[in-house]
Image (cartoon, rainbow, N blue to C red; front, side):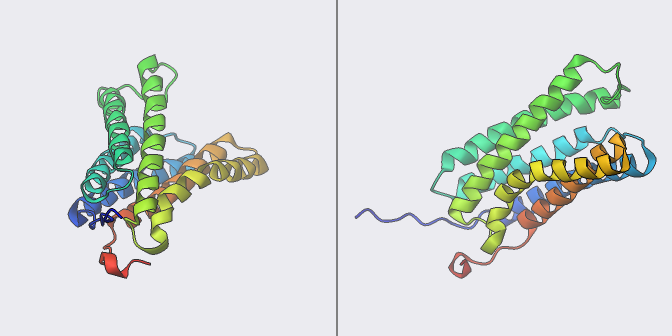
Amino acid sequence: MMPVMRDSEPDGRLMRIAGLLVAAGAVAMAIKGVLLVVTGNDRSLVPWFGLLTSLGFVLAAVALWRSVQRLRWLSALGGVAALTGVATAAVAVGYLITGTIPESEGAPSAVGASYAILAAGAFLSLLSLGIVIAANRSLSGWWRWLPLGLVAVQMPIFIVAGAIGDGVGSEDVTDGMSLALTGAAWMLLGYALARPSPDSESRP
């Protein structure tokens, strides 16, 4: 029989920074959602959410690629998808800094395209890295299932937010609740990535 190659712990420093970046982006998303529900004002915070979380995924992908043996190619795929997210989020941030509000009707089509590519890149990166983390137990205990769980709960979040918005007759509440609940879920992901991991021997 061929010897089984053991994984090492992901670089704790990289994972902590990745988690903090993801959590910071998630806070921006949650704030946008809460403001939309409470005031009806749609603040342009999605570009910052995309930029910070994508940067976090790039670092997480690097840490995983260095430490895992199984599905290593998925770590690379997640990193490439995250880099795409960084580039497209930077486009939206650039427009925002120069005075173009991405959510306004007069925003260039490039902004809408960047949002679509950013969403696709974030989803692909989260899915890829989630599979690697679950398969290699790169996070301890049940935390390893959190990234994939986040993929699974996104649609129910939209459904719940839609039901609440329909109940009060407000599209702002629907959109705001979707954003706020998504931000809260991604904050939990940031915590999972940043929390200290026990040694491999103590993993269940």
